[in-house]
Length: 404
Image (cartoon, rainbow, N blue to C red; front, side):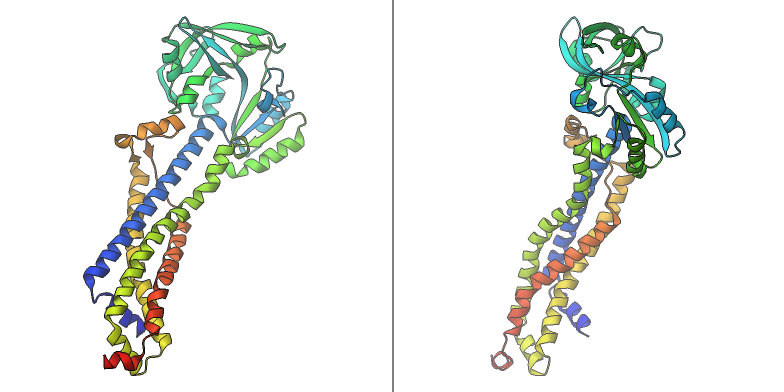
């Protein structure tokens, strides 16, 4: 009975209730869209980093990532490769030679990070080759081919087929140089990476560094990235003199982003519902003052204060839930549409995201449990906003209200 009365009371003033419901719908929709957009950006960034470069796990000399010395290579390389080839969790792997050095053209000189890779193994392990925009990915017909970023090729003022010089330390810590031919150009969307990274054939680089095969990094892709910690633990127990780490351990930025992604919806909705709470409070307070005589009559004929309080709280919750349900349904449909088709932000400056490693096209998504969080927040907001009007109603003295 109270539910029926509360529902009818809401629509006594359809204009006022409709405006508030529309505000709640808009707030819910906006919160869901912003949260899903943030989730999509984070997922895009994580997938790009994993698939293009970082992979699910990596193995290095224990001090290589901090010191990056050429002599800090992986000594038990062949034994580790045998282990990986027989492990069913491993999908693919690639061994790399890594150096920091300088790149020089006729126009200028710039600092770069040099990746020596086996292009066939790298194709099986990462998707980096898909960033090719011009030329070929480490053309095997060229002597010492080099694959460089779009920003770097513009900075050096060179073209496909031009020669550049790479300078770096060898294993004896002596400065050595090699002439390389530009075979292709890549563009990742990360301007800083494109300007400071070059790829060369691993064998060409190893010959210059040590006159023999030399590996500073082994990257590993798994069938299931959730098995990363287990594999890393097994490798660290099996082999001494190396350190295996998962992608989360290798990239603090990615760890922070994945941990924070689940809380975006909560904080965004807190702000939106805080603002909507004042609208709910105002609407319910006005409704109470307009119905003073009615409430007094109900109390005079026997409705106790608990039932009056419950009725007002139900009105607030039902009013809020109506708007929230419609808002979440519209948000769900919108998120699903853009999750399939992508949200292109190019027209509003989406290209600027590439500076930070994000694409202009985002695929938003919301985890199902996040809708439950929103529902709990909505109910809590409705209850809190209705407490003041309900308490005002309880202060009514039936006799005085009826006489007035």
